[in-house]
Image (tube, rainbow, N blue to C red; front, side, top):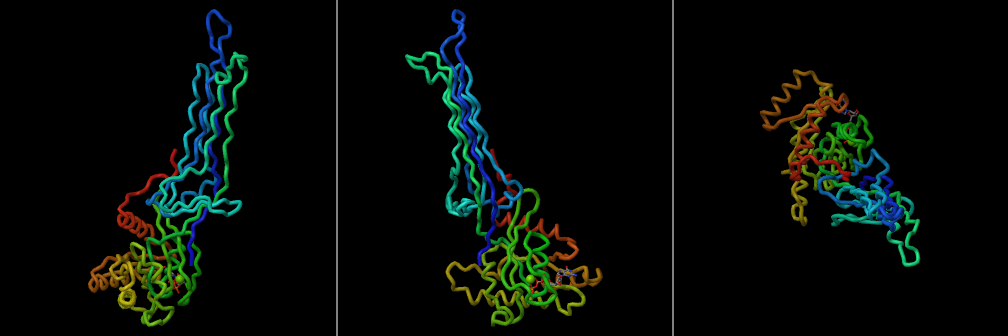
Length: 353
Ligand SMILES: Nc1nc2c(ncn2[C@@H]2O[C@H](COP(=O)(O)OP(=O)(O)OP(=O)(O)O)[C@@H](O)[C@H]2O)c(=O)[nH]1
Ligand SMILES: [Mg+2]
């Protein structure tokens, strides 16, 4: 299964500035020799890759991106200023395709920077055209036209966070609430049959990718329910959100559910520990989420938190995926932990001049 993030945008380089038609002013001569300078070069469009960003989210707002035009040349052989290049920062591994033909124009894997469009050349000023037979050319060259291209940026997403938990715990409800993902949600177990990814934006510049996978049940490592094979989709995430249904009428024991899921994860590690480059899941940091608190009286919630604390000595986030309660706090914590795990701080803007 392929998860892709895709945006279609139009990029344009800058036009070259026109050359100038000017003549020297000299006191004894009404019109001196030609001295029109060249136009400045138009800006290039450059793609630069960054490990600090992991989605194309920043390119979903604006559809058009243009470098600056070169300025016209001027008298006294002055060259016009060059137009600033446009640098678009994209995640490592982004593909640049032609929107028209779908052909891959650039694969930005292990590439720091690539020039995708060249800015127009500046036109020559009339000084350049002076010859022995034409000492006073009245013309200059126009600037070279710019280039425009409609492209599709495509990125294979790699999840930063995996959501784990029993079926019906509210995992898909959570991802649908925090991202643009639209998974199926229903009041019965095993609604989600294939992993779903969503890009979560927190604050202005930081975002992360969450994977919602089918629920696990006791005995999943023996193939019960949908089994544990979907855990492979979250092997590379830096942390897990462990969603536990705490609603009064679920009839479940949240403390037991927590232990059961962790047991299945340990079993997954046992089965995979000899795999090349395997990184165990049972030691991965978990953010524990009590979900559906809108369906639990607050005294009951407090009791449950205490019992959980006593048994596992772990902090929990109590949220409601339906009302949205406490979700913002949860996301801030998750975003901070991911940035830390990657050794980064909050990123700056991705479009630079
Ligand atoms: N009242 C309430 N209902 C919730 C909450 N979160 C989820 N639900 C409901 O719980 C049911 C299951 O939610 P899903 O998001 O489909 O659960 P899931 O964990 O993705 O389930 P599977 O895909 O089967 O593993 C749905 O009917 C949701 O509307 C919540 O915070 N409050
Ligand atoms: Mg689901």
